[in-house]
Amino acid sequence: MEPRLNLFGSPVVAKALGHYGAAAPVLIKESTVPTATQNLVMLRASQINGDGYATDVHGKNAAHAGETATRLNLVATWREATVFTDAERAALELTEQGTRIADGAGGVTDEAWANAVEHYDEDQLTALVAFIALINATNRFAVINRQRGGDYQPTQAG
Image 1 (cartoon, rainbow, N blue to C red):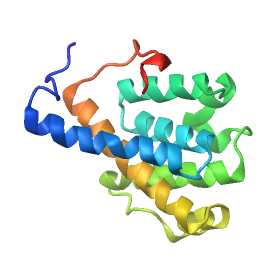
Image 2 (image 1 turned 135 degrees about the horizontal axis):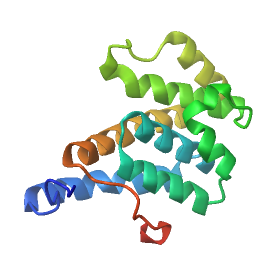
Image 3 (image 1 turned 60 degrees about the horizontal axis):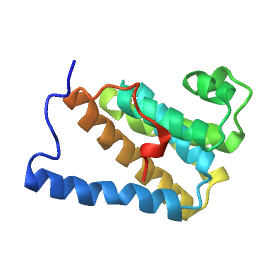
Image 4 (image 1 turned 90 degrees about the horizontal axis):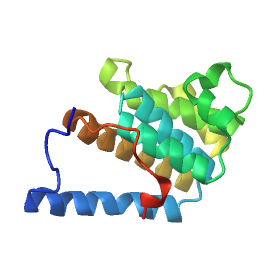
């Protein structure tokens, strides 16, 4: 199965995606959300959305950054795992609820939000919301276009 489109083949789309893609590095480098949490959020949303390409990218990038195989293997079942901090659990819950809004799940509950507020300051919460929105949009580009995972190497990242 090959990708349906070269998303960068259209000058207008390429320009828009370039601006869009520039947001991620700013968030990743300048946010005070811990890198491990950023990686978990991007990986979990990508898993939920069935984005093989982004699951490949974010799993390998997390491993390259020092994340353990145990935690990466358990992120899809984080509720039943003992290897995540309370703050990471709050971020993963926020991610899941923010990602599943299209499933008619009703959005993010007050309970999930209150739990996240216990662990993150306002700047970090704002960044988490931006990460969740950005990865979900990115996942949709890849899923619609049938981008496949498996061949990514962490050294490909900018």
